[in-house]
Structure formats: C-alpha cells, structure tokens
Image (cartoon, rainbow, N blue to C red; front, side, top):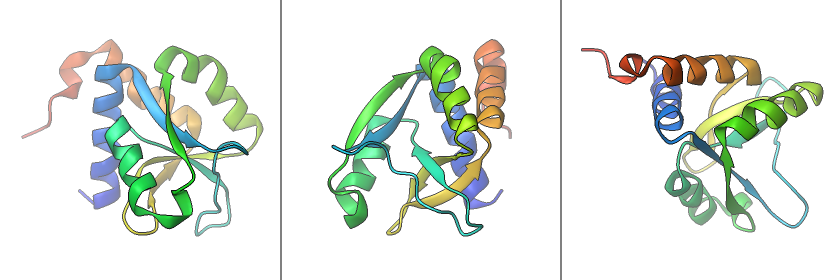
Length: 126
C-alpha cells in the first residue's frame, strides 16, 4: 500500500469512528491550493491533532486554525459546495509541504459512509 493510500485508509477509519473531520481556516477562509495536476484541493484531516501538526509545522499554514466539521454537516453541506466549486478533497495531508492524497468529494463521502454503515470493515486487513 502506498503512503497516500495508507493515509486515505487511516482517514476513512478515523472519520467513520469519530463522525467528525477537520479542516483549517483563517480570517479569509479555507485554503485550496493547486495540486500538481492544476486542480484546487481543500485539505481535511481525520483528527484535530493531525490538522494542528500541519498548522504548527508548515509555514504556509501558520495563520490557520483547526475547525471541526460533523460528518452529517460535511455530507449535507460541504460535499455539494465542494463539488459545485470543482474542488478536490485532500485527505490527511502531511509533511513539510502539506501534501498527500486528493480525491473527489463524493468518493470520500462514499468510502467513509461505507465504514460507518458496516463497522466490521474498519478493522485493518491482515
């Protein structure tokens, strides 16, 4: 499993268990930097500590603060808005440049929802 796939799987499991995900915001709003492919992606993390680590360690995110989003609100409000704006979702970005796996918002919603509906799927495979 690649590092990005591992981060995505951790994201799905942790969000399904907590039914909360995290992003960051500053006085202007939420970041949505361009990906290597030229599309914009808004980062989300599966825990406050993951989001706070990026804020603490990545200079470009120093002015941001972690914000909790309940899973139901993410599905009902955020996913449609992200899709309308043509944004990807970045999951558990990390490292010195805060990068990682990006996907369509609907794909993230589908994957997490599957784990919420069937908790047996959350167990790591052997």
